[in-house]
Image (cartoon, rainbow, N blue to C red; front, side, top):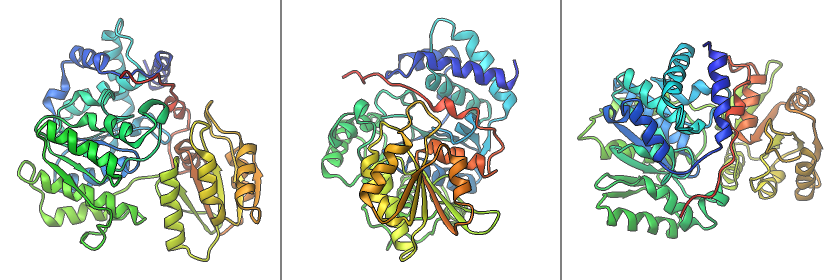
Length: 422
């Protein structure tokens, strides 16, 4: 087997869709020797900010000299982004070997792609003798494949509306799914600001005798260590990471200077990421794929670029609340180009353009056939924002020559989920 064949095998696992429940993952992990028993984890769930918080925690602990595994999803361009050790992507030959080994024991289990990737990551991190693994949930938490581990700490970012068709139509129901990562006696740290959602976490933590730390929504005045990531919202994510490090100081001591160094050098592509255009000008990439993300992007643009109206390139998935996102972002733009996302679930570019025109008649809005066409149309613009789906951000990284992969693996992010069992 070569790497392209391993990727094709992973594509074949998409035939099983996405299943909620832990039985498959526990079974496959057992067949792999239960590698999770050899590792220490920080488990991170939430609606937005999971990836940034994971990146900050990884950077802090790596700066402290630990060998740190990082498991995240979805990937922007390459599947290998999901499994990293000290921010080095898993090598292609390791992907091949792990696929071969797990495929040999998965004959009757019919693991889904995410379940399979989860156990791949566990096996790789154990082989690499990671001191700590920063472990991001895929969807929800309670029945997410990542929830087979018992972490040192459970971390929950904010709670907002996203994936309601699977997680529930109220913030309380969504919070209940996220609260599923809380384990008996294991500390919990959260920035959840919705009172009803936080009440869920309080109740579950009390029931499980898990110490609960709550970070308020305005940590800027007390945050002494700046982060390299842009946006005021990253101050809240940084405060969450810092609180987690503090909670675990007795188990994993980290000196103050290493915390400072970790936050100052953290890197997380596709989230308020600046790119210099070859012919001059700048592009801002941001995966604002839900309403809360769009509100964060709008706040960043209004604060840091007041009086400047960028050109907007936007694409979204049809199952997102894109009309609300369009209403939030339309007033900020001078021109708007809408594009389809490379997904069977894409929203139509014409429908997106109509929504933007309705929200801001003063801004010219045009539908493009693809991202390449939109980039050509914007080649002389000094300030362009590419946002919406992370699928689109990943394609932009490829088109702009910022990823070594050819984009043939972005389709591995595709999935259709059934209802979560209640």
